[in-house]
Length: 71
Image (cartoon, rainbow, N blue to C red; front, top):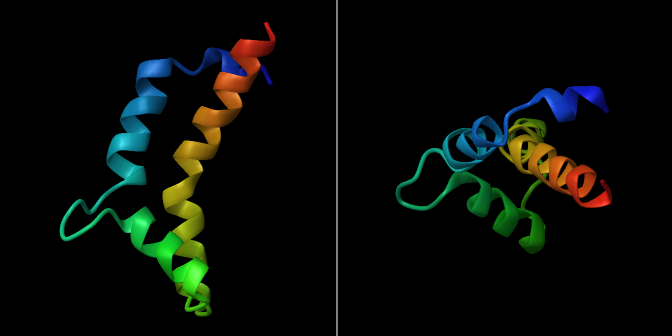
């Protein structure tokens, strides 16, 4: 968990805003993949991999925030 402590928060937020949401138009890619997941259309391995890659910065952010909250 020391790795999470060493990551600067501004870098994690920047990763969420760029890697997590890119491409921005016509809609954020992560949002598109989450809609596909809810609708049951997320079946291709490339789409599942894409969802994991775009969601990874948000998972790191959540883990870092939880670690900070617990002290």
